[in-house]
Structure formats: structure tokens, C-alpha cells
Length: 593
Image (tube, rainbow, N blue to C red; front, side, top):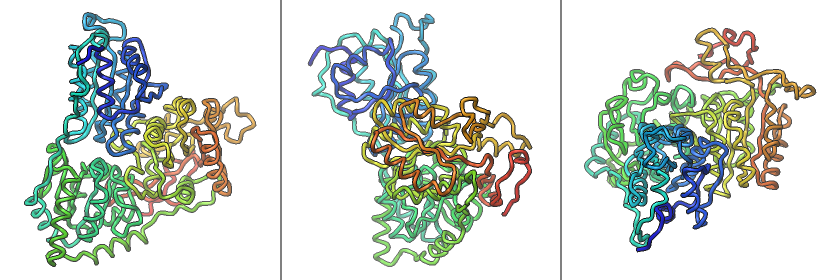
């Protein structure tokens, strides 16, 4: 036993639980914890420019590698409220991050002290656990519980709030006697696996829907083995993209209203059986339940009991970690295949491959200003199979999911359910902090990029290099497209005549992203014409390697391009391959199907 401050014990626990990186902003009410971090010197700290940015950095850090838990630290009051969006996006996607906030001394709680707010109550709906620790010795114990909760069952975030006097109080603590608690994860039984495979065996045209739970469980290899031994095609969800390589013979495309492939939707509509593993039947994937489920039977495997039946009742529901389920399913399927008991679906798989080869959207356009589809075509050429893409929401993300290619798990890092603007940039920095070697390409529209553009300075200061592709049409593109239903184009344009860009051909596009990036200590390249693509990608990679800072690669797009999407998976609107003018955007469309 040793006598120490509660915050010194806290840092020892963080080390023992595997924390090596933190993202945050210091302040008066959390300075004791920062003093403990400085004294130990074992945890790298990245100073954010906004606490919400720090929370998204923590998310990116967690999402980058199996087993990671991102740590976000802030002071009392607004620092905690700034973290709420990060907690929400982490909770929605089953991502564990630990948020630690400072708090007013216990005697000043509920007395309207400066920057004192009941952050535990505010955070409770978007966290697995949120607590203000009122006893000093409970600080290391609360952290132990936090890590256990974050890792057990459905993963998720935790917020721990530490009053100033609790942080400073001395306690007796023995770190050598401390051990992380083993997480609890439910597992499919053999009986359940046999029932599931018996149902699968009755199907003519089955599919596996592979969700983000497979990525979380680090079970992509098991998924591929299971798909190969059964011969059943796979539809990954947006959060499960990369669990099976895009060019695998059993990868049948993504399904959905926006981030989907034409062939993926067509295959889903043709199927008669769906085996969902680690997914949540998100509405952007399903559309209306009636259309999605018509003529099909369903199995749903999920780690969280209350996820099963939440959207619709499956024919069989099994509570299990995706990895544990795939392991026992693979064992039984292998036995059945060896014994000749497993059905042959090779004809169905060949039919799915046929759709994948023929039902593609056009990407090759020569127009100036650029069409976004061409940008993604060129990205596929410029970036290798190991590239990690980071993005959040908007037409940039939707088109990226339709046209880019992903070949490995955790190579598509996306805020799936919450989709907060500004998430991309700090999340990419978190991914870089987690892995100094991987190829990282962030993808943003101009508005997402502007939302937290100040975090570029973090990348420059802390030498966190990556390439940030910005597709600039000076519009809130997705909202502009959605406003078509109201026959309007209202308050969604970001264009203005920038008085500082008088000699610039893009002066009317407003913000000079190249100038801002350079002012933040980063590098930037602007692309206006198709013939500039190859040189620009090479230059961006050269600048990143030479200077070890983020490089912004901006593409000047035509103002209006509508991206394929719809209200049902059988009613996706495909748009004619002609750019619309700004003035007639609400009406000048031609539907191809």
C-alpha cells in the first residue's frame, strides 16, 4: 500500500488498463489530474482546440484498432457539455471511449458555482454509465468499473466526473494488487448454431448481413471463413464495410437508401433469407420494414438482447458476441459441409456476382468544374488497398460509400448513426495517433470540413499527418438535395464573393480552404481539372511525408450534383448524367429508374 492523491491512483489505473494516449483540454477543475499525468509521463496527451474535437479524436483512436479505448479529458462545465456529441456518436455506434471531467468541489455542488453543472445527469442518456465520484477511494474503483462496462456486452462510452477536492484527497492504494476485470460477452451455443444452420439450409437465396459488431469483435476472418464454407453471399452494412473485401467473390454489395450499391439493393430484394450478425437494422440500411422484409425469413444475432426485435421480430434471435457466434457457426457448418448436409448455393452466388458486374453507376466524367463521381474514381486509382478512409455524413460520405473500395476491417471509419458534421477531421487525427504508419485519407464536403477546421492546427502541432480530401461545391449538398421535396433551395449555399480572393477563379465559392489550411500550419493542394488528378495525389503524398502534417486536397466541384438515393430500397432515384444549373436545381432532374 502507498499513500497518494486519488488522481495519482487514477493515472496508475489508466496505465494498467492499457491507456497510452489521451486527447483533451486542461482547465482549473481538472488540473490535478493533469499534474498526475505530467508527473508520470507515461500517457501521451494531444491538446485539442475544442473539447468536442477531443472526444471525436478519442473515437477515432478507439475505432482504429481492436482493443483500443480512447481517452478524452476536460475541465468542468462547458468541457463536459462539449463532450456530449462525442459520447452520443460513440454510444450510437457501440464504441468505447472514456470521458473524464473535472467538477466543482463537493461543498459547492448545487450552489451554481462557476462552471459547475450536473454533467453526469446530462451525459446519462448517451453513455453506458455516467457518474460523479463523491468519495476519493472510489476514484480507482470507478475507473475499474468503467473499463469493465466499456468492454462488456455491447461496447459503449463512460463518463467519470471528478470533483476538485476528490481529485486532491489522499488515499491508500496498491496498484500491484489491481487487475482489470474480465469483460462479459454472451456466446451462441451449439444448439442455437444448429437451429440457425437448419433454417439457413431451407433457404433458396440466402444472404449474410454483416454488421459493425463483427468489426468490434475483430471477427472478420471468421466471417469470411463462414461465408466461404457455406457459399452464402455477404451484404455488409455501412458499419461492417471492410469485414469482407470488396473484391471477394461473395461480397454482394451494400444495401440501403443512400450508402448502397445498385447491385446490393437488387440482391437484397431477390433474397429469401437473411442472416444478420452484429447489425442493428438501421433505417438507412432497411428503409421501411415492410419492403425490406417482404418474402424473407430472418435470423438476428446481436450482443445486446434489447436490439433483437427492436426494429422487427426475426424468425430466430440469438444473443451473442459476433465473434463467438461465428466461431461456433463455422464449426458446425464445417462438420455439415464435410458430411454433405449443407446445401449448395453456388448458383445463387453466381447470380449475385452477375449483378455486381453489370449494375454499376457511371464515374468517368470529363466536366469542369469537376463532377464528384470522377473524384472517387481517381481516389480508387491513387490510394492502395490498405488505405483507411475516415468520414462522417453528407453527399461526400454517401457518394464515397457508393464509389470507393474497402478491403480490410477498420479501413472504413465512419460515424454511422449520429453523423455529426465536423467529426471527420478530429477522428482522422485520432486514427493517426493510434497508428503512425497506416495510410489515412479523410473525406469531407466543404461544410463538414469547416465545422471543426481549427483542429488542423492539432495535426500540425503534434505531427499527425494524413490526407484530407475536400470535395467543395460550396453547398450543404445533402440538405440541398433533401430540400428538393419542398421545391426550395433555402439557406444551404455556402457561396459568397470572398473579397480576399479577387483574382481567384473560385472567389465565388467563399472560404479559401487552402489559405486556412496553410494558416493552420498544414499544406494544401487545389484541383480544378481532370488532368490535374494524378499529379495532385502524388504531390499531396509527397508534402505529407516531407512535412509530417495534414495535407488538404481540395477538389472544386460543380455546384449541384444529385447523388443516387431514395425512400425505399426498391425506389432509388438514379439521376441523369448531366449537371443541373444552380437556378433550376429543384426541378431539372430526370429519373432513370
